[in-house]
Structures are given as structure tokens and as C-alpha cells.
Image (cartoon, rainbow, N blue to C red):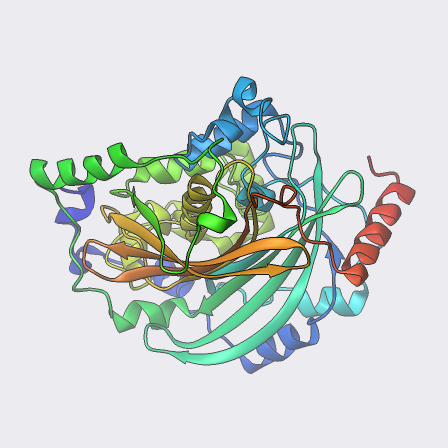
Length: 433
């Protein structure tokens, strides 16, 4: 099945003066120095995501937006019979739930450092690290505070000079308990440089014969959810396969489903009409005119092939967080309802273009007992139809043992737990709810 981008070639893009101007922003030494001065400063997250409080419906919709029908997330009648007594959210959903946290005003010196920082510079999510500490139940409201942890300058074959940032988001529930810590690896690149390189320009949109599509469908048909059948620690050995799953072929519909499932990309979320007008006034650099002179969000490279080509890619591609959600689905399908995914680290190594199919495989690489927990370490790989590894990941999963209690979440580091409690206490002092 040919993708709609098949007839679009690099030479078809005729950039207007405004478009050319929009891709001309550069990474400066001044911005890098400002970024480094921000390291270690945490602030309350004021953004209001599409979802602020988890419900049965939005948990199910989020799971379905990732193509996940695990009944632990989607079927209240089934979930009531599990150890959790209720539907719980897939762990990655912690990243897209947020209610504004009240906090002290940002100091003037911090505000000055962040003003127009890396203005017009394109940002790629290149991977993340998750540590999970509690489940999210329907009725849980999630707040967060965040700050920059690191800033590294590199030379990239794709985009010349680039900046590698890690931001830590601490997700906290309405009881002041840390639910998860999300470290996001972001790569900042100069749009004009990326557009000139053309490293990926030779990649053609994928198309599939009926037989090739049937082979993908066969993988889907064979996928299994471990569910209530316990995955015993004693029965798992290094070298065991985690099975095979398929993801794709990627379509614009997949990106739409991700957004409709709750991924808002706040504060840069796609908006319409008057709200879009207000957003254009607030963050004009984020809106870039298309070939028809219409300002549109820079993130449309996830569905607009011409804009994707303008910044150096042959066609539109997915959000990195979509594959992170697919990764969590793969892990939770394998480990079952009683297990707990405690840690995930992923590296987004290749773009996932429209039409690409990802084959997901994994294996157990070790097992250990630590602090009374039965822990299994696994590694996972996503491979596209060109034979390229697009995601490399590792994870730690606590499994039930035949002669031990059910696994528990790891304890929150004491210093972090205390900071979260202080942040939430200040939120309530300032009239937060």
C-alpha cells in the first residue's frame, strides 16, 4: 500500500522568503551558556494538559490511542479481579497528565535566562528514562515540577551543531506522593542546517503488496497478553524471548489517535481558530508559514510531508513518545498483571517515517534478587522494514515469585520524596486544589 507522500520529491518545495527566514535560526554560544545556568533549578509546572485527572474513560482512550487493548487498562470488570482492584493507567500515561501546580514566582534572573531561549530551534525527542514508583488510579490528579539536568554540545552528521538536553519531570499525585520520574532526552538542531544536509533524502516511502501486509497482520494475530497468567520469576531465564510484536505501518491516523488519546504537546498543542490566533500571538516563532502562506505549527512535520522535507527529512514521521508508549505496551503484555515495570530507558535511534513498520523483539538479559524483589532485566529492539534499528531500550521488571510476596514498587529516594512534599505543600498554601 503506497503512502500518500510517494509522489512528493525534495525539489517540489518552493520556500517563500518567510519560510526561508523561519528556518534561519541558529544555536548561539549565548543560548548554550544561558541553558547551563538553568541546570538544577526546578519549578512548578504551570501547564494544563488535556488530561488533569485520570478517569476510566481517559485511561482507556490513552491505551487505545497507543493501540493497546490490555484489559488491565481498558476493562473495569476484568481489572477489579486483579491485585490492583481497579483499572490502572499504563505507566507512560504519567507523562501526559498534568494539572497546574502553584508555586513561588520565577526569579527575575531565571526568567531572563529562559526568555526566547533557543528561539526557532527545532527539538527532537531522542529518548527517555523512566522510574516508576506508584500506579495511577482513576481519580488520581497528577501535578509535576521540572528542571534541566544536563546540557551537552555535539556535532551531528544530520544537523551540524546540536545541543543535547536532559530535563527531569517529577510527577506527583494529589497526596503529594511521587508517581514517576521522567527524564527526557532532547536534541536541539538548527533548521537551516538540517535542511541542507539531506542525509535521509534517498529514503523512499514504503509500499506493500497484499502478501507483505498479510505478513504484518499475521504478527498482530499471534500477539498475546500475559494478563492474569503469572509470569513467575523462577521460570524466566537469561536469553528467553519476550516475543514479537508489530507496530505500523505508520499512518497520519496513528498520529491523530495519539493526540486524541490525550497527548497534547502542551504548551505547543495544536489549536483551532481563535485559540490558534491567541497561540500565534503568544509564541509566534512556533508558527511557520506553509507553501500557501498560512502560518501553522512547526510540529506539523509529524503529518505535513512538505514541512518535514523543508527541515531535512524525506517525509513526515512519528513522535518519539509514540514508540515509547508502544515499548511499554510490549513490556506489560509480556510481564502480566502482577508484575511491575520499575525502570525503562530508551534511545530513539532512527526516524519512524510514514509507511514504516516496526518489528519489536526483546530478550531477558539477566535476573537478580535485590531488596526482597525478584528483578528481571530485559533489552528490546525496534527494527524497521529497511533492517534498521530505530529504538534500543532496556527495562527492569519486578516479577512475582512462587514463594514470595507480590512485587512492590521501589521506594522513592528520600530527598526527592521530601522535595515533592514541599512543592505540594506550597501548592496548597497558595490556594491550589
